[in-house]
Length: 273
Image (tube, rainbow, N blue to C red; front, side, top):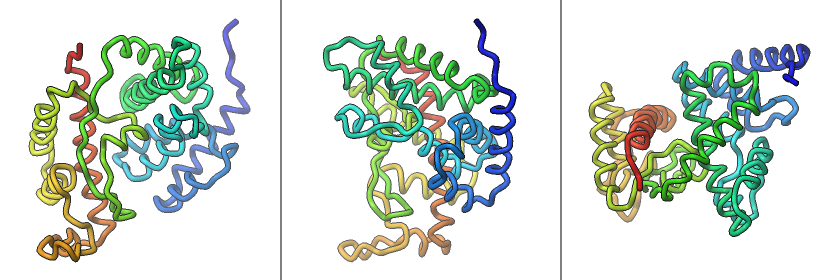
């Protein structure tokens, strides 16, 4: 029997989505991080993520994705993390894997499903995902299962500094939280890095975005706004560009978006064994 959407529920979701999208960026991010789950259904977050990406509002989009997709796959595999919204999808992933090493296999499949979901939300497949959210996710889980028949990919480890905390981050580690990183076999890691760099140089028109992107995501990143006493010759980006910390963060995000799209392009093309 075909499921008929609850009109009252759809109306409530519409009101929640409209209210969320009318917020100023800072208020939106704070609301997404702290609001009770019942006030932010998964369908609302999924729709908000898509619309924010389409509007190129990538900072709040990242906050929405982090809330919706929750715990890291590594933590899930170790039994110490439970997704707030997507626990049901992890349970479905468990049903599809063998009993041997079930947590590790399920976590890998779950992570692949998240990668498929995010990719679809930003494309044509995501236009009405919020109206049939669980069915949409189950289709992406099936896609991920087919993808898992190939050998496990190696995630490129581009290093950067988190502008909000000053702590070093690694995009390979971040891929545990964000399912949109490029991947390849170990013997092609250098080739992928060169491909990402070339796409950044081709796709960025603002020279500040390009310079910050190359600095932060390739090689040893410069400090954002606090000089390193052990390397006083390395000028912080805020001083180099005459911008504040938040402006540097926004420019770095624009570069990261280009790199993510390039990583997805590579992953689609790369024929892994």
